Length: 306
Figure 1 (cartoon, rainbow, N blue to C red):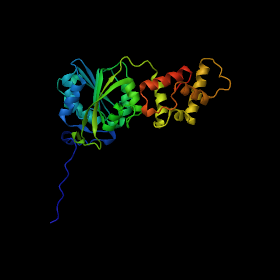
Figure 2: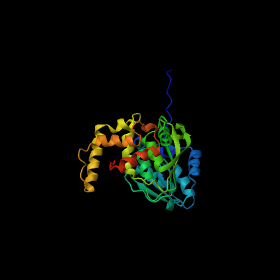
Figure 3: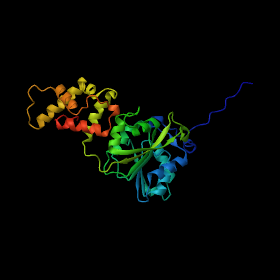
Figure 4: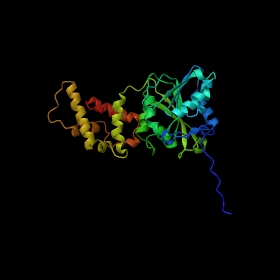
């Protein structure tokens, strides 16, 4: 007799499977099933009974229900109407129903409401844009405890000289203190993702550093385009020189100043880098103070990055 293959057990959450809901990988739907990790994330957030909490991608509500037990209000952002219905059904007729507000749609396109803390098992494909949306949000929130793909979390906390140190690292650490809390294995999710995960705590710097973030972002974008190259080499690129020259001419125009006779953007950039002895520096080893010094030197000479 030939062997009969046993049917593979579904990895889909049992309660949702009964309703015919299959998780959508395009939305990064991996439901955190381990209650101990959920509890630990909530503890690390230091939640208070008076808090308003923002949750991104609540899924079937495993974390949402725990949050509702601890805080004044939960604002849950969910893009999948099927899971919105599941979440509403889960709290319907309970004291938690009045404490839950659901925002349906893409959180990156929505205006974030006021909140004290953000706790979420993030859809990994929106990690980077959401972190900066969060850090530029006003008024300030107290902290965020977020689940990310392990490598992304490692980039957030990387220091100058580390292999994973990048523009994400320095831009995030400019605006916030970031700490790695714990690693989370694939089997803690349904369906299991293809990568390991990690929980990170983010605390915004309040007050924020007194710099123009758009300018800062423009500088780090140039520096990290080839992070192993020197700054002198990074600034020599034709596209960079062209953009800086256009910005300089615009600044002159706004201030009703004539362009200096025989002006050369190349010579001006090289002169600034030489003046602060930064031409030989490489982005991968530069810290926040190094980038601030470079930004100040360029801005002082009328050269801007935005």
